[in-house]
Length: 452
Image (cartoon, rainbow, N blue to C red; front, side, top):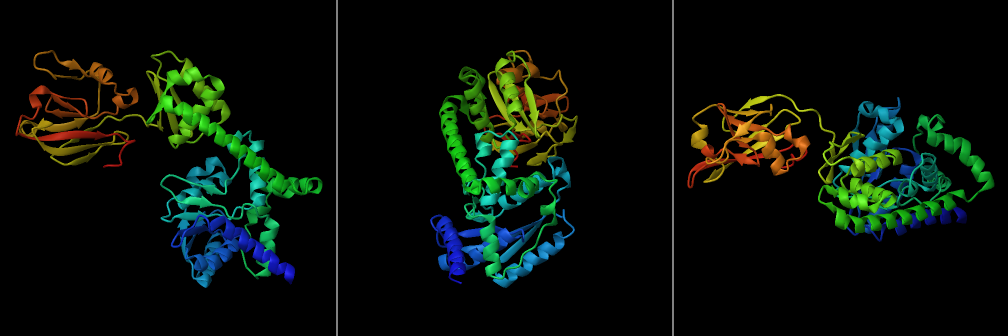
């Protein structure tokens, strides 16, 4: 009995030591609850610790709908949280659109997306020492670099999302099972965990038992290796931050400076740039090709590299990332004085802001039929009464409008007159005069719709 008490005490102390320095009184912490033994044990521990430290505990169960038992698991989690008087939210997700990623990867992506949307300070996940060893081996078998091989961190700080905590990361699975049995806990078993067609299950059931016979401490040694990889990744990030000070401004990467850095250091900066833009990091082969095209393509080349629904484009001496753009469409939208007009995707939206002595003369617009057109080519505009009309193509080039935005740019016409190229030019005969009621037209591209 003394051994049982010590085991339970040690696990409680492990979670306390991991969380108490981070969570102040009043902190909100949400547990990702699958219903499996790992998350059930962590729920039991947090349910005891939260009153002691004045934490506000809740839980989230993500219903993937993959297993025939998915409904029963949700009911189990609801009953368990009701017993513990812990608030539970059940999030239903549809895995079908992401099946091309593989069932495991798709489920993980949806699960993390659901967790990231929660309005809490911290999210607790029940990953343990065996999970860490399996993750490291899987990453190495996939040819991961030092960042991938650093596996799962105990703490993950994220921008505009709750901090992820893994307080059981140093605890082996056997200890969690022991704790659950000692406390008479109930949990559900995912039948897919026995299917060794999944790579993780193949390692867990076929490879790791053999490894343990020869290397019984493999879990801790692999954890130590992942920590070494994490330190190396941190040093690479520090180097990339130094290079970024000279090469990255906002969402632009200076290709000239990237070229000077050379292959290895250039790839490190490119990887850092992509991570800062929130894009998926391509594999090593795609990253090398991306670096080659950015640095070696001729000056006037229209470089566009696609991967995982994103694009890397180069214009002049700068590289940009964005969600993959669908092709422009031909459209005409009437304007009847609305303050906001949503245009067909991917053309974004137009905002019309009233002004005095600025923008387009409302009186002039009221003399004709006002339409918003997509660009067709060959348009021109009279910007200066003393000079000939300007060709729209040349005007956009002079203004530095990015090539992929030129065909998306909406144009405002009054009858047959091109009146306004939003953000670039207004026809001189339509300019609002001093003290005259006018309207300022603002374009919000599809990638910048936050204000709409």
